[in-house]
Image (tube, rainbow, N blue to C red; front, side, top):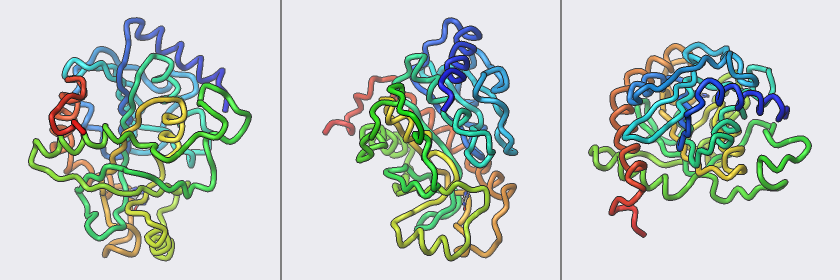
Length: 283
Ligand code: HPA
């Protein structure tokens, strides 16, 4: 990975937003775009102005970094993400995580659209990612070791922060909602899966499937950020639903969940801002 390029990206953001001190990062994947509305905007920067990030090539991924606040908590919201399958290497995938760490953030929340494999994971449900399976066949930390990303062999026993997962449950609970929990499996894409692959993934322990999030979670965890991740289930995985899979249908399904997602994020940010002291979080 070209860390010099990532450092140039961090400097470009610091130059554009000299007063920015984000505590949290939020990466909005397919269909999550409208969640940005819950943040009071302090600044906006095109991905193309950030070396290493470049322009997303996926429809529905806007390609903007929004500097904003919610419940007074300074947040960098990435509207869109880069994927390995776009064919431009790991820098674009790693850049948001590198930036967050460089600017002093302590926590990142990753979001995506995913296909539901487990029976209860039907379109419109939100799933807290408890753990993942990297079935991408590639790894973002391949190559010379750099201490920016922590140790050479990072522990993977708890990538997704337990306290943050409880906070997500609490926030949903206050809204009268129950979120699903599960294991997210990432493929490299860009094809959707075959029904045989989905049967295989189910037997491996996967609850939902998608083409992102795992590399960012690995990098963020290795670099010492607390990591939370949410899948919005937009479709039943291949072979489990009546229709063939299409990107437009998946993003449309995601848009209908927008009001619920916005309320949930507002509620979660309230908790995060209140220094994570809600009663139900006490062990
Ligand atoms: N497979 C892979 N990626 C996805 C899916 C899926 O079923 N749904 C949304 N993103």
